[in-house]
Amino acid sequence: MMPCLALVMVVSLTACKKGENAKKDNLDMTSNKAGITVYMDKGAKIDPKYLASGKLAINYLPNIKGDFEKKHIDKIVNSIDKNVKVLLISTNKKGLEPVFKGVKNKLPGVITIADGIGELSSEDKHMVIKDKNIDIGLLEYMYSGRESVITAKEMSADNFIYIISKEKASTRGFIEDINKARLAAEKYNMKFSVEEVGEDYGDLQKKLDAMDEQTKSTTAIYPSEEKYSEFCLDNVIKSRFILPNINSENDGELLAKKLASDSMEKFKNREDFDKEISKKLASKGLKNKVAGISESRKAVVTELVAEVANYMYEKNFTLEECYSNSTILNRANTDLNLGLNFDSMGISYGYFRKLTFLTRIY
View (spheres, rainbow, N blue to C red):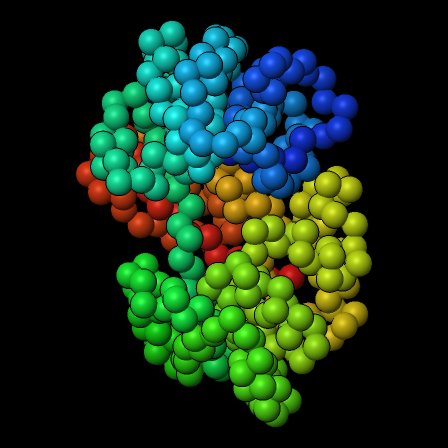
């Protein structure tokens, strides 16, 4: 059994430690390197333990208008050397797909992994997944109604309210998500309803306020769009609804703000932060009432890839063994305390999957 020589991932995350030793050039990009080297967008929050491990080096991509250019591609390709086992680039912007070809030409043994690069969400995605220079492609799926129903059942919910804006309710992706969530609710004998919301949240708030205390305590409210996350969390704190998925841009930051807690960066690791949040929620009578993901969603993909890479090299396993659905799920369960569902991205050259994470209950 031949182990993989190197592993390159493309991922986008943000949240660098202050005082990190790295010189920036006029592109506003660092060239930090480690066995697992990451390039990601600014703003994503990763578990602090990865920043302190020494096994992971994070570089933040410049916050530019438009797509990345050749100078950014060259900067990344030129920075990769034989000491890099994993290169992870994750960004919603386009322009960095050629990095994979450049790295493969330079170091053919490197395994290239694209996490959520802009091209994977474009009309050209079917060409991208057939790119022979990309070994693995991961895309965090934006629809998680079905998964939220599963978590709500675990939190003892009897009712599930799917909250969505009127303008998004008729779009294909959300129609499919609502149908999947409805089927899951039927499976678990859970009442299911959809609340379409306009610009004013007043009507929805009146419906929630009109429920009796017992109904509120067994009703899950799900914000299918980020703009409803804070509204839902406020109602949980006020009226003790169940929130199976905060589904915000950054759940940890929103929780810290609402509960007057230190941010995750102030803790040694994500687990310690989650314990503090759980303690504060319990003090308000909200034990097992809220579920979310404290890191940024894209940061979770990076953490998962890092754990799979470490596992592969520790066990001397092949790429095929480590990127099977069962192995990825096992790493998510064991190392990240997260459930995970997979969806196909179509016929591809490498291993491409859409990932939908189940949240952690605080």
